[in-house]
Amino acid sequence: MKRFFNPNNILAFVTVAREGSVSRAAEILHLTQPAISHQIKRLSEETGIILFRRTPHGLDLTADGETLLPKAEQVLNAMADLRRIASTQSGQISGKLRIGTIVDPEFIRLGQLLSGLKKNHPGIVTELVHGISGEILDKLKRRTIDLGFYLCDPEEIGQIPSEQPLHTLKLAQFDYRVIAPVGWEARVVNASWAELAALPWIGTTPVSVHNRLLTKVFSRHGVVQNSMALVDHEASMLEMVRSGVGLSLCRESIALHQRQAYGLTICETQRIPACLCILALDAQKDVPIMAALFDQLEAVW
Image (cartoon, rainbow, N blue to C red; front, side, top):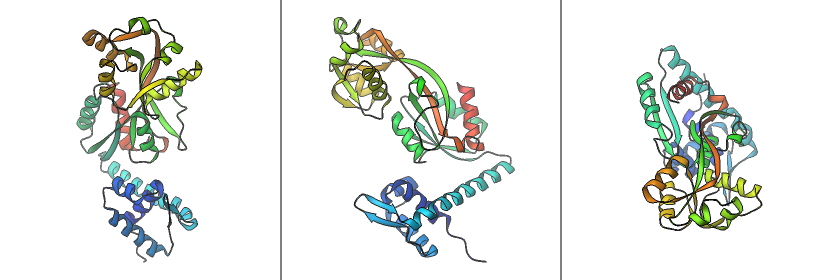
């Protein structure tokens, strides 16, 4: 009987193919770049195929590599199925879950989720990967996480752009409010969206939910946001508003607290609905370890 290919070499090949970079693959797999390069070289020797070609932008699959990639992914999926079946047969659900987290732990009820999961399924180990909402979606598509929390317009549910079908579970709906520095009441409290757009704003990166929501609103009103600074951390945004820099979006519960504690101004005429949901690849949602987490989410929310 011929020896089988080393599954670690196959995993390295698939990861480099997805990322287009040995360095990013090494980061994801927690290996050194020379180790990844060695695994790719070994698989190339075992198959007799040149898998990648170097370009100024990284590594691209050769025609033979593109042909081999779907088969390699099937092998990895089959091995994952084997592991899951063995776990189910033993009567225990076990394995690692990589969860993408956003904003503050209290808002996504992270402590309750992990506590319940540990109590009901002690064999499940969780790895938390923090980021902003749009980054979590990208990590899911690249399969560097198994599922993740996501913020979006309620109208986006079921329509989040992805080449791979997504499973979306809506957890909560809330409003974003526009907050402004102390003393800006005359300009902000009863302002229209056009009037608000002209004022100085603390901008956010394109992948953030603030940016996505505001771009949609301002586009609908035919105006452009006047961004004076660019940040991607909620605490920094709040500090800049308190310092008098400009306007920002803020979850309503936090906005009301900031007004009470620091005297910040809240626009009373405008608000933006949003929702918190959790995303996973549709093909993975019924895997026992994922189903266990979704059951726990239902219990917590």
